[in-house]
Image 1 (cartoon, one colour):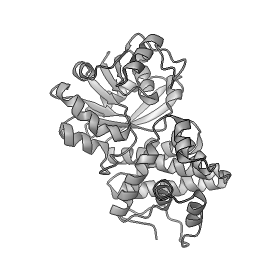
Image 2: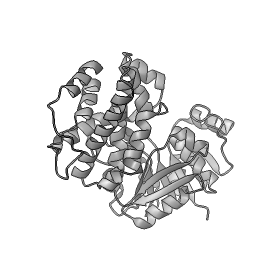
Image 3: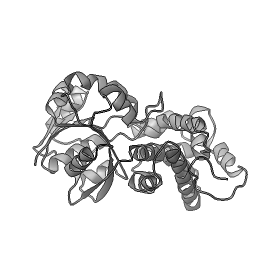
Amino acid sequence: MSTSVGVVGAGSWGTALALLLARNGHEVSLWSRDAHQVAALNKDRCNQRYLPGAEFPDQLAVTADLASVARDCHILLIAVPSHAFRDLLPKLQPHLPSRPKIAWATKGLECRSGKLLHQVTAELLGPETPAAALSGPTFAGEVAKDLPTAITVASTNPDFAQEMAGLLHNPHFRAYTTDDVIGVQLGGATKNVLAIAAGVADGMGFAANARAALITRGLAEMMRLGIAMGGRPETLMGLAGVGDLILTCTDNQSRNRRFGLGLGKGLPRDEVVAQIGQEIEGVVTAGAIHQLAKTHGLDMPITEQVYLILNAGLSPMEAVRNLLLREQKPEAGFVANGNPP
């Protein structure tokens, strides 16, 4: 059965999700705030900047009218950067039906407060609002090409989780469900910071041994934070945790990894950002994750060194030295209420 879905945000990921939903037979409205972009998308029937060659189905409309998207669509799927999430919801709210259904594919936290996006949604739209987070190992270009992909849909409302998963599911795209909204969101946010670290190491020429160590110890940090905040270990060992971590740390389609690669090669930060030309979530998320670690008294040394590189002028070489010269400890991945011995 066809459902009307509004996809809010016409970047690479928002466009890929709009393509997926429209190919699945749903009526999709893709919103961009940029009228020039909307005109180009409608003219080309393709997002030439982000996903060239992926033609828009007839079921996909593009608009700059946010009010009509909010008013006329059965479900809204938000795909804007995390720093824009809170500002967007009040713009949607006056036009929403009495019981809106909201999902998001944003992988990040509210940086000013460190709140997870389901907390922001409940605060602004009410705790009874059906809400879901989408996360997992996904590159937009591969979804647009109908290459095999799997994600997790997290919601405390099981009916909405299943509904959202059903809209996305097809022979190329598998959607799992969970009620662990905390674990799914923290996995998606933390992996971006760790991908910067992996990119820095590779940019410095440290190769496979260092990359494997960073991914493994980074997973320990992710699990430590997730469990301390109420997430479940099995979630973080799943698609939204270790799955997304491996993807973003090892493939240059990841903007966060490419950003780290540039820093590791000694390029100026602004130059690397300009080369990538898209949002790099790990840059803004590093501060929020670092603060959450301090708040919960957690040892997250890789995250800390990324934060210091980005915010305190620490050089990549100094960060590596700091990690390698840490006090020797027995290996332990995580414990339920704190740090390894």
